Structure formats: C-alpha cells, structure tokens
Amino acid sequence: MAFESLTEKLQNVFKGLRGKGRLSEADVKAALKEVKMALLEADVNFKVVKQFTKSVEERAVGQDVMNGLNPAQMVIKIVNEELTSLMGSEVSELSFRPGKALTIFLMAGLQGAGKTTATAKIAGALKKKGKKSLLVACDIYRPAAIEQLQINGDKLGIEVFKEGTDLKPARIAKDAEEYALKNGFNVMIIDTAGRLHVDEDMMNELVEIKNTVDVHETIFVVDAMTGQDAVNVAKEFDEKVGVDGIVVSKLDGDTRGGAALSIKAVTGKPIIYASVGEKLEDIEPFYPDRMANRILGMGDVLSLIEKAEAAIDIDEDKGREMASRMKKGKFDFEDYLESMKQMRNMGGLTSILSMLPGMGIKASDIEGMVDEKKLKHMEAIVLSMTKAERQNPKLLNPRRKYRIASGAGVDIAEVNRFIKQFEQSQKMMKQMGGMGRRHGGMAGLGSMMGKGRFPF
Image (cartoon, rainbow, N blue to C red; front, side):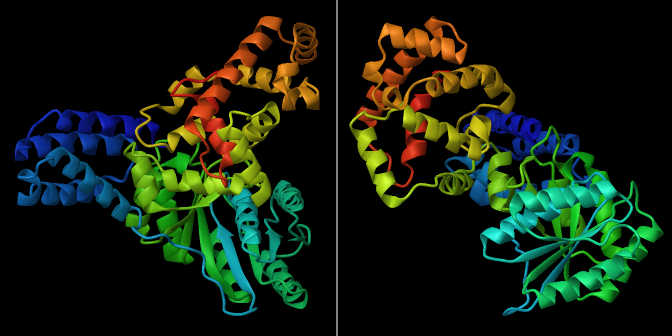
C-alpha cells in the first residue's frame, strides 16, 4: 500500500515526541529533521519538503504549542493540517457544462501511466451519478489501447466511439463530438496516445484536438510509482498543453507516494481522483484531509463508511431482518457468505483495516495474519453446505460434516474448527447486539473478526 513506509517512519517520530512532557525548540527541530528525511525518502519534491518543514516549524515553535498540556499532540495536529494543505485542502471535482450541454474531457499522460484504464474508470464513476458518457478511442498508434478501451466500455455498459487507426486523432474526436450531440450524450471522454517520454509530436496532437473540439477540461494521469518524474512531466504538460486536474494512478501499489504529495504544490493543479486498484470500480475522489489521516496512521473512517454503503446492496426490510438476527445471535452461514462478498467489494480485509484508526497494523503484517488460502477454504466449506444447513447450522452432524469436507476438498478437522469459531462469533454478536440495520452485513463481518483476532 502506498505511503506504508512513510507512515511507519512518521509514527516512530511522533512516538518519540509523546514520551516527552514538554517540547523544547530543539525537540521540534530534531523531530522535523526526521520528518524531512522520511518525506525525501518517499520521493517528495525537495523544494516542497523544505517549505513544508518550514511551515510546520513556524507553527510548532509557537507559544500556544510549547505551553500546551499535550504539545506532542499539537505537533501531530499541525503536521496533519500542513499535509492536508500540501495536497490541496479541499476536495476538487470535475466540472460540467450547465444543463444538457455536452462536456468534453481530454485525457493525457505518458504511456504506461494507466491512462486508458483511468478513462474507463472515470466514465464508470460518472455513470453512477447519472451521466451518459461516450468513450472516444484516439490512441491510433496502439490498436491494443483501442481494444482495451472497448473491453472496459463493454464491462461498464458504456459506449465506445472508434474509427480505427487511419484517421488523425483530431478528426476522430470531431466525428465523436457530432455523434455524441446527435445521440444524447452529456459527457465525452477522449483517450489519447501516450509516449514513453514527452515529445513535440505528442504535444502538438493534443493541442490539435483541443483546437478541433470544445474540450472543457484536460485531465492528466500520473503514475504514482514514477515519483518525481511524474511531477516534472505534469508540469511540462501544463505549460505546453494546459492541465485542469490530475488523476493519480496505481496509488495502491508498492510505491513511495511522493508524486501525490508533491504534484499539487508543484503544478498548482488539484488531484481529482485516485486510482486505488485494478478493478474498474477502484477509483475514488481524492480527499486531501482523509489522505493526510491515512499517512499519519489516523485511519480513514469516512471512506470506510462510504465503501460499506456502496458494497451493501440490501433493501430496508432485509437490513432490519439481518440486524434482528444478529441481536439474537442467529447470524447464519448465508449471512456469512454475504459478508464475505461485501468485504471483497470493499477491497478486502487489508483495505478495511488500513482505514481503521489506531489499528497499528501494516498491510505487510496483515498479510501474515490472514491466510488468503484459508479464507477460500472457509468459503468452499460454506458453499459445500445445502441451503438448509447454511440457515440452520444445528443440522451439521458428523455425517454431514464429512460430506462437506469432501465437497470443499479440506480435512474434517478444518470443518470442525471453522464451525466452532462460527458458533463463538454468534455468541459474541448476541452480546454486542445489532450494529444498525443499514450495515447489518458488515457488522456481522466485524463480529466474525473478533477483538483483533481473526477466526481464519
């Protein structure tokens, strides 16, 4: 997960501050020296780091902090606020032309940045908001890019406009604009060609498209894994073509994340979306305050709640029924399957735990705690049960358990252990009571996890 190393280093710095009753100016400067090194190692632009630490120091060495009852906490608060400011303070969104007018977005970026995928992801996100988008394939140099856009469009149920590789991109864009206007589209997103590096032909092609069709905003896609190179490229694009917003891709990977922390300060352009996974739904609005919280190990409960709401597709009556069963300790294996489905929709257990404040668990640690192979075994065990057995675990006598073990391809001991852990979770849920009708499924999953221990 991005920022994991930075988070760990910053937490160590703050841990040292918490051990002091009061902080001297020397304490603050020593801590900020470590913060500075951590940011530089995360590939944050050195000018940005210099200004950031200067701003924190000016605020932290103030009278209100030095004489405070909890000065270490105040320093953490200041660092959090400055990180948020560094990344843009407020949430930025795509803007649209008023009414039913066609809004055209031009996607730009280097080859390999994830631009074609990001183009489809944005269209998918806008579809959920009621926008009718037309994807336009203007990367005429890579037939595979046109095919990829078509495949992604088909998966999302979004139409793709393509005219092969013989016409110039500006001509294709113009034809697509006319098609969109005739067929009631209110958004058009143009996927353009990337290059391995910035060159004049690439820039001229983008300028020609912008001169041919009425582009409302140009969105630049940067690969978080390229660090400061991504920031420099974005700045050059903005100077020559004009950029209105940024999408940071591959922010879920094993990356230092410096691009996300630097790009707003260097280019002045806001990050609008963060691409956080390989699935087409793995894109989310970029919230600077939430990202700052996650970097500092303070969790991101709001994003977790939003993911839960999006993942839980149950009606009001079903939600009330599930909450009632949980209160009575009657959460069954059917509910378990639903909870596992919801957990996957939310990005998996690692993603969920990374958003919880105070967990103090790194993604690499979680991988050691949770055996994905065992998770699949557990699901196979449940799927090997009949519907009656899932709904009434008391039916599970030895003969049935042997049949289930054979069907799941596991040892009978594993079936017995899983059922015993499930029964313990039921008792725990009965003690805890319902966690709210809307989040019934995830509450059940939370109880299955137990008090920081996983019955997996």
